[in-house]
Length: 221
Ligand SMILES: N[C@@H](CCC(=O)N[C@@H](CS)C(=O)NCC(=O)O)C(=O)O
Image: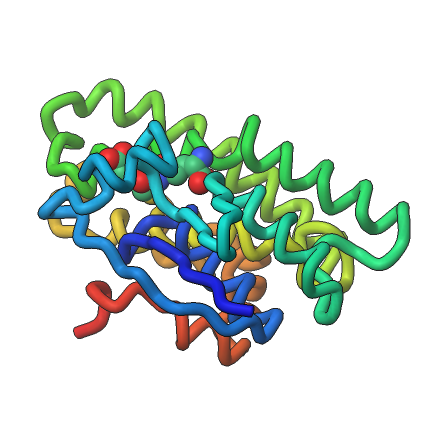
């Protein structure tokens, strides 16, 4: 069995997929694309994913786009080290969390704060950023409260919800640490003071060997 995963360093969706595959011990050929040269916009890539997005998994003749779909596909093929639970209740709660992330808790971080900072656009619209910061804090408070009640986002065991959400939180922290974020006073750093339960959750995840193995290479050094 041989998988190929196309990904871009620093893409949180792709990081979640890579992280999940490493946790499950699934080997794959790494097809790291270069965002700057727009490898993913080349025609042959669009043949597989019309939107030209990463990650994309090739498994022989089977092509799966969408990071969460890839994780669900691999879960069926590799049920060991489960990320989507082992009984109906766990599976239901994990999928509930996954959809809460997708519908409510991802975009206020990614679209509202992280992307404008990474694109160097945040200081163009400081008032809009303050509005976005309010929405980001609403989300972080909700997640921080959730992590007071359980060790991981969907209970006492690491699940797909943690794997999917962690890269968005780490991307936010990296963006908030940029020099141009200082004047925005986002109030998120240091995370162990602003949101201690999220900080402890991140520490637990960082201790997993798959975290270091899948850490975005261009973020190093
Ligand atoms: N829903 C998709 C979103 C993937 C996505 O937005 N990928 C971004 C990078 S994080 C991408 O490929 N961007 C390249 C582009 O839009 O040209 C998933 O989760 O797989």
